[in-house]
Amino acid sequence: MTTRRDLGRMAVAVAAAAIAPPALADGEAGVRDLYGRFLAAQNTRDLAAVRATLWPSPKFLWVSDGRPFWGPGALIERMGAFQRAEVWRVDPSFERSRVVEVAPDAAFLSVPLVLTIGDAAAPAHLKWLVGVLCRRGGEGWRIAALFTTEDKGG
Image 1 (cartoon, one colour):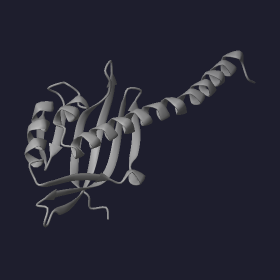
Image 2 (cartoon, rainbow, N blue to C red; image 1 turned 45 degrees about the horizontal axis):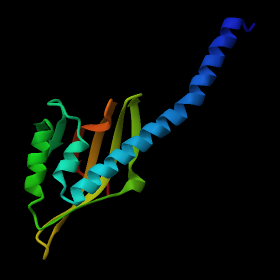
Image 3 (cartoon, helix red, strand yellow; image 1 turned 30 degrees about the horizontal axis):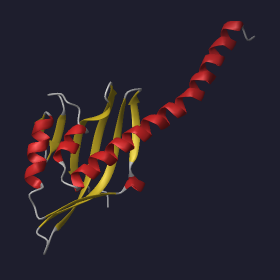
């Protein structure tokens, strides 16, 4: 026999399910927009705009080549050194990317990409898989952590 309490619980569950997809969609759109700004800033070598996409905290983390770099300044310094190359271009494969909501104000973006870097005559084309942990705060969505690894998926 269904009680009022059971009906109330079902109503709450239905309401929560109805609300969740738009919340995820809004979060996914925000995360993708954030990564788009990060990408555009990298490709134009605008390190100030790159910094604006990062969580302004010493707890910001970038794991690059198996080493941790803490704080936005460490990313800017290292990326700036890479961007001294004659050619620097990041081309993501958005059709293979995925966003996973981990909390209402946190999401993880996985995106494979090709980094073209080096001399104009013979640049390297490196396949990477990038994991981006994003958090939403008073300033909107920001990148809290980046994890880069060689893409061995094909």
